[in-house]
Length: 378
Image (cartoon, rainbow, N blue to C red; front, side, top):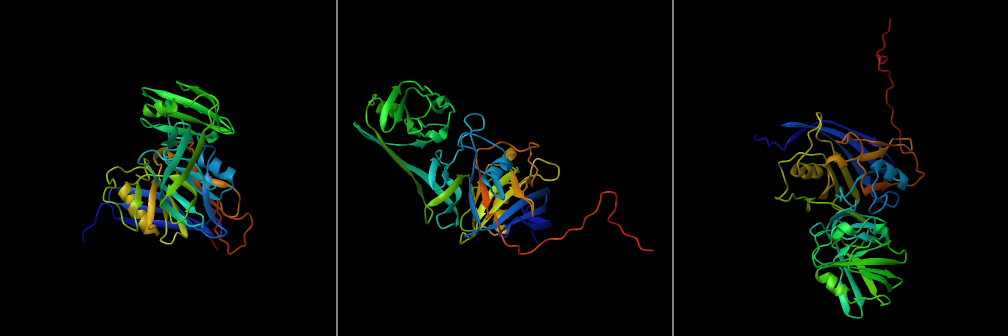
């Protein structure tokens, strides 16, 4: 019998309820070159249990436990990769409450989300948008992105907050910034001013040929804007966070998945019919857990029951939190490789009704650490 180095032995697996439709499973696998420890949230998505965006703000960052608790979720994981040394903005698309918050960076269209029917989806999301003014129509190439591609025109809405827009156009040879309020140009500049974004407006930034296009706009000009999310999901997405790369397509692993670098990893996957969502965190860079490669992560997600899955931000960002059974207290289940939770801009939260019917209970032995669990009878 031939054994691959990717094969593993399941040494331990324990499942506890988080709510009536959400379970937390801890597991330990032994691979040929080391131990791997991880945690899996399995959620049955239905009319009572749902998944949604948790976030402190598009360019803000907070520990997963904090933003999950603030949102009222019973469990969750960290989400997208992000501009960690700059704006904190996620790299991929973000959708919340059926609203497109952010478009994806080039080549980063993959997301995990839930559609309007409440089903889990691994789907591609792209930006479709345009700006119309007296000189004609211009396509939008970015929405609330940390980097504007050469020759592009980007839109920044109030969701961007007060974070500086200066670094969005690093190394640009020509820029143009247009402040729009209530459909009218309020100001225009050939530099990035970081003027606050109007609550009833937005900011347009162009670079190179995009700047030339916006150069025709002056104070008082009327301007219209329209944008939406384009997706290959069977129905529109009510929420989504970005990830990369996709780990499973219809149960198959892409041949291009890296199989060399073992790291802490976070992943999300869905069952074939979308009724079950899997959120997984794998510890790594630690003595008791070496982490996994992307290929190994895809293999594990398929083993857990996912037919489609995507890799989320990993390394020090990998965090999985869950409510302790029978309480409202959220705990970090895994061991973040930085030694504590990293502040991140978004995540995937699991939500259940505030009141549920008791379906069962779990009994555990209680003992003290001095050996009080040993009983001797004369």
